Amino acid sequence: MSTFKAPKGTYDLIPPVSETFLAVREALAAPLRRAGYGYVETPGFESVELFARGVGESTDIVTKEMYAFTTKGGDELALRPEGTASVLRAALEANLHKAGNLPVKLWYSGSYYRYERPQKGRYRHFSQVGAEAIGAEDPALDAELIILAVDAYKSLGLRTFRLLLNSLGDKECRPVYRAALQDFLRGLDLDDDTRRRIDINPLRVLDDKREAVQKQLTGAPMMRDHLCEACKTYHEQVRELLTAAGVEFEDDPKLVRGLDYYTRTTFEFVHDGLGSQSAVGGGGRYDGLSEMIGGPELPSVGWALGVDRTVLALEAEGVELHVPASTQVFTVALGEEARRTLFGVVTELRRAGVPTDFAFGGKGLKNAMKSANRSGARYAIVAGERDLAEGGVQLKDLQSGEQAPVALGEIVAELRRKLV
Image 1 (cartoon, rainbow, N blue to C red):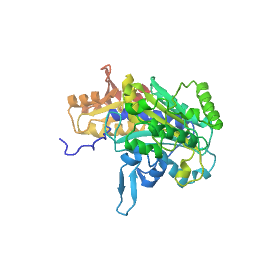
Image 2 (image 1 turned 30 degrees about the vertical axis):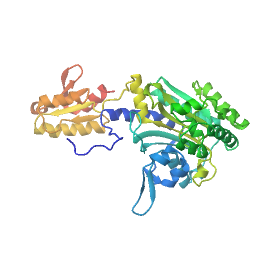
Image 3 (image 1 turned 180 degrees about the horizontal axis):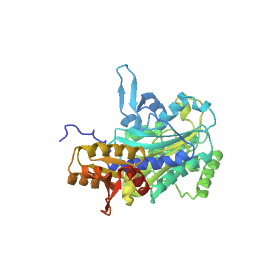
């Protein structure tokens, strides 16, 4: 029994489940790479101020969920609770927006941390793949990112996810709507915490999942009724581009998402097989974020897709990913001379691109063959002193059980031929 356990609300990824997570990450990233997005990696922690400014001081993420700490040198840092602020900070610090064509297109993958009440699909440590397109205001860019996410989900075999779409307006029309919403909300019977939110970020009240709050929101003013002409036109162009690409979506006038920085296009992917934690990913346009964190005006759009949630969605649909066996050939040596010779064959096969493993620990034939079968390998190479004296090895097909001698000098070429 181990003395230590993973911290509450976290998990370890171990084989074979970890192979599924890797396959999901790769599938979510693949469309981005084809669309010209370059990989970016940022530190696991940043200045607290970056998230307070970037994510929004009124958000639950900053007020309740952030892992913040003071370093020995007195710096106030936090484990990153989301990816966008960090990626934008990195792009600004490296002056990527001055280096060439805009938008700067970046994708990332990593772990994020929030102090939440752990439940299935909501962990304190979770994994995301994200994408940001920085420095261009273009409905085609919003549509591109949404289409890339849809294509990623579909490539995994997901079928029953839904895309929710909304517009949150811009700095021209949002203030008028905000004032109208505040007037409406102040007339409701709400607790003190929620009333404080009315002053700081009233749109977040629309996102409150509690039934007692949702019941009172009937008749609340909606952003779509307050959009200026420019925002209406922009949103309509996004919708038209998605429709032309065969992407189905649902208009959701209450969709605001949990971060303060969104403007105009806002979207969320939900999967009804996941219960209360139905969101598998989402994002939107954040035209003012660069200025909030001290940068120039850089209209941008992005998303983050949850790897953990996507794996749960696949399970809910009964989709099993085809994950290639990590071992295709398993090598069993009987006797010391055979161990030396076959270990050389293992190295040669690996260098030839054939995933190969070796019966370590000097196991007898029976136990070594059990290991071969458990490894998922298609073929086993078995050799003892007599085989080597005759210049060959035995090649066994672990599916059919057939076995035949192969010359030692031809075994690598023979296996490459069979495994094509």
